Image (tube, rainbow, N blue to C red; front, side, top):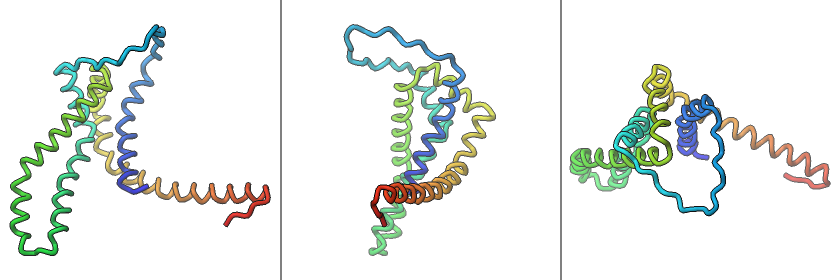
Length: 184
């Protein structure tokens, strides 16, 4: 697994942690009685306050930081492609700088999309609990330490992945040897 993909997976896990904590502090929900016929799910109406809370959670959780690096990476990729044409460098840099406000709008569009996803997946009450956590000193510290935690977890996961892979191979070879098969 690539370091970037692993970091994204870990980021998702770290972002989900407050939700898990909140869920563990609530009494278990009772299962509704089965319905006679399964109806098509109806998307809940999202109020402006619900959407605003979803946006706050999304921003305060640190998820938007991942969007911050994407657009500059596009610019860097374009610069790399233009390396064979050095006469374009000055103009290309000016164009990329001039496009920054438009690119910020594109980032805001993604933030709005992510907020809407949160709003659809979580109730306003749930988002309120999570927003309260992210406003707290512990929540702020959680978000502040996320990048360092993710870096260390990615490193640890790479070592763990290699160790487990080797362990599994040794165990499989041993078990297959017991059954009369030799594996290299």
